[in-house]
Length: 319
Image (cartoon, rainbow, N blue to C red; front, side, top):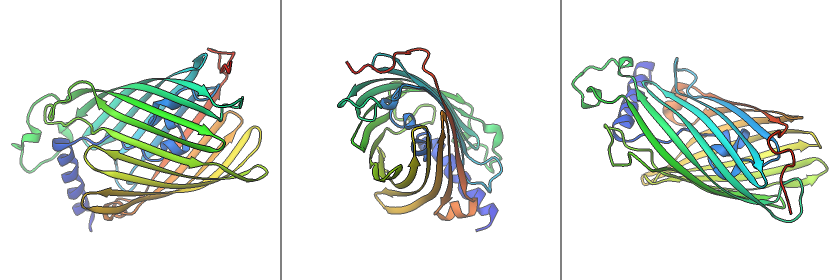
């Protein structure tokens, strides 16, 4: 497949997606190497630190100006067992861009007397405000009277609510969340744009400590949307840790399933490091589809810092 054919195919899918359906933000491994808040609001304020995270995800490295996703999140245990947070995000995909802000709140209930907060049950909610922009000037169509290209509102405001539960106990951890529940502009079609499909996330994992300062962490994530699309992530991570530092290396595999069958999407080796309060993550995403092979691989970079909690210096209360 030559580059002209690839551009034509990608343009077709891009325009089809704009006219008939806008998928959710393309979160890949952000939940694994950066911040689980991106897929589940119950992780808001899950530690006693003031957490600050940023990610940059580049897709299809052979494309100049190819799709990319950026996030910036911050959350903190604000008082007693309550966490509050905020996330900003931007997704650019050709002439379509999606910008927004997410505000979240969560409540954490301790399980046992583990003062490291490893064992707790949490539930939370968040509100996402999206602004979707369609820049027709970036297109060079053969037919200008296409209904998708006519004058209209090029900025669509879409609000959504998200709900989540999560728990961790003696190395076992998991969560359930429902994201992109429309609370406005949720008619079937809004100015030729269909609202984001609601997504359901289910994750489960176990941290198995098999030697001093060494652990193995298998995990799985299943996400399903109301359009009957399913994605399955299989992850494995090995890590070394001490009182202040963590170093990890792992591998992730994603498969897509729908009514027509299944297809391998992405495999990604990744590394993580926590040195004191500074944390870093990097994943190299290798596409397994025909278009991905032609478009090239991508990468995900995450960087964060845990700030001393000046809002709630007492930290999490167990009694």
